Image (cartoon, rainbow, N blue to C red):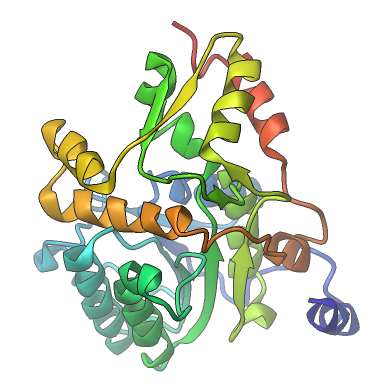
Length: 300
């Protein structure tokens, strides 16, 4: 980390820079947790953005290749946040090749912390590793960002209803994760999108400390003022509960396998990508939970 920071200083890097082109930056998944934060960061800097998703004016669907032609036309740089699951990741590989063949010159990819690590527990990341390889082999310049699990999973996504019900029901066992604020991810992504000196770099991001799921429940109990407990599910039971609420079998099994990384204590470490890119510490879970509760995310 120190060598990379020193290199940035020697290059005169001190934060935001002007992009090398006036063409819009393509943001795929621009209405998702990271995508909308990337868009907000870029627009605040006056950078033109081309947002594309299934529900945007410029429609894009990873699973519908008829929406792909022209999506990267006139675009120099793109931010890609691929879907979860083997099918979606395979489509992302195909899109990367398609976009590079049609003029895309630079890709910033959202991947996952642990991708490329050896071990049975990391088999779930093989599809994401394939996307990384597709990006690196596309001929386009690239930067890869690998964040830990998002804190916002408990306020905006899969865990919100569990928090509201007072039970976080996952198959994470007693393993810990270095949860990261998605706002930090959005700021990192915007920084690397706007500075081509990050080309060819892979950054792993996390929060400043690890927490088990039981510790997360305690943090949320303190922040919300009501009791929230962690229920450790057997992995098969976790899949059954997810499919019962409408999650596809493929996606449910992918979620189970992602939690297996935590369950097997393979995620109990801190990464320093936020400091490397932004020159500051990442946000702590306690601060995030308190401010999120004050904003009414878990109000009845």
